[in-house]
Image (tube, rainbow, N blue to C red; front, side, top):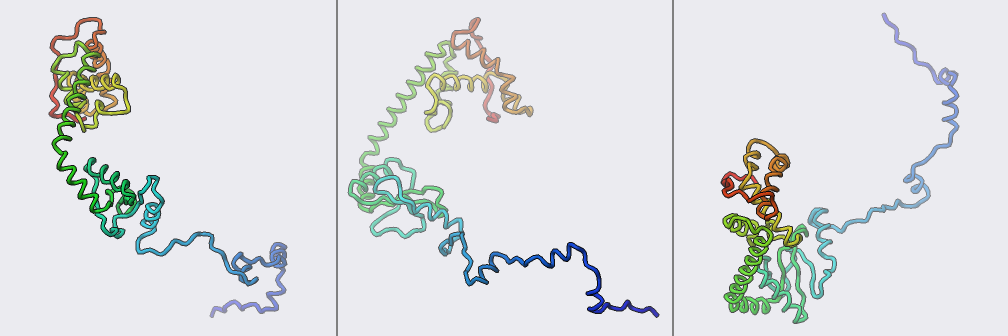
Length: 273
């Protein structure tokens, strides 16, 4: 029969010699936590984090809502969210028609009334404006009456821009084939395309060079074939760079010889760029 080891009595435990570390720890004064000290002294804890006002939306929604409540930098304008109640006798005008939006904003301010700039419910993206209903009616009537005149003005302005672009290309590249000139004008300089010919951050001379280089790269070099074979754009550009520059210089009349009479023209059907 096995005997269980007898438990030591309290007197026996007290007789066991303790280590020096135990004696030091036992004699050390007990330290209290910050909360315990404040509670013992009768003080309450202080929460340094500002409390966000209760809202039905998430904290992120509250953040963007507060952002739209900041004062607008424009006179007679105020920011608001899409879900905010529409002021009395006001209507919402969505973005898209520059003539309507611009005139609604200006005529509302002329009448010393507020224009509400409307953001989506996240406070990130502008959706349109809220303006008095009578102003909106007046602007819509004006837009209908001037639609044909404005369309003709836009057409004339576009024709003028196209003529200036043609003159620019002919001046810098007098030996450029007529076919290439027309393709570049209706591609790189196409209104609303967002391509290099329409950028406003580059000089006219630089735009012409970039547009011509892009046309040569895509239409007169194996650039797109290299892309289809798996090369990166950077690698393909490096391989055809000398050919692009040689043709460009020839079209500019600064080459060592006459430009080639018939350059190979590639189809853009399978273009990857």
